[in-house]
Image (cartoon, rainbow, N blue to C red):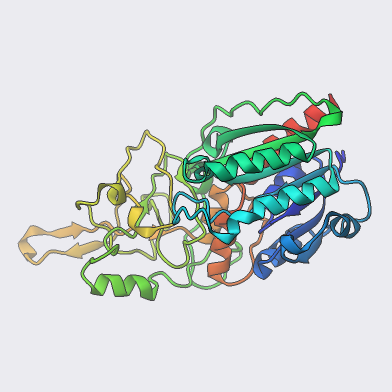
Length: 383
């Protein structure tokens, strides 16, 4: 069933579009500046058009023409969030903070039946609240009745603690009664998402995006040589098999933001020895129990915590009579593992460099959450 045509601004790799496509919407156009992300979007949404452009330089008529000249049912999009992110500098003057305003301008010009905007939790913080209130005002003045909520993806069938702000609006003249989707009690954990994957290989394999080309990047080796000064000893936030993953970030290719839990299930290779179990920086060395959800994963390596029960290779002690010593050595997730945790199917292939692939996955809206939101939107429109 086709519930109508959608345009995805700031589409990235297409996680938001995928969820809406699953729900029966037609994705007509994806817009972004990231070439690698657009290639991924095009490969996985072959019937949609793609446009590499700065949204600030576009207008509604152009977008509608590129979408086939039809009336637009929905406008989707998650404007880049670095200026608002709680992991960033919280700079109210960051030029990227203006992109939600451009989204509101285009929304007013297109006048779809509904819109969905996604952004980071930091938008609600006091330092950025002025932007949030201003954005809400502009969206309402565009002629839409607004609903907004902070959602945690783990509550909606995604094996990851990931909090994001969602703003959904319906054109005032439609008089739509919208209800947020009910929470999913399944609360999937890492073992549910990636426990069945084979060991990753350093060479391309049959499973797309499941390789580790650079198991120990030069930046990490440099930090280790400096004996842990700065962030070197806190480069891993190790996950747990039976807990949801922390938020997948866009920085996994440069530093080891997330450490694979290892254990008896799979993925013993590509290990790192830069995790220290004691230290004064409590925020950067957080641990979680097997029966608790993981802490949120940030974009900064120094804030990453420790897995509660991982084991790695065996190393000989200095004293031969003491026997071998089990050394804890986590490794980071592959792109495919990150994609699984984000609820992407294995058929969804990410293109570009490994760095670009991590960025695309980390920036995406989990398709599972997008699908549930899309179903609630379609139910509201059809009722």
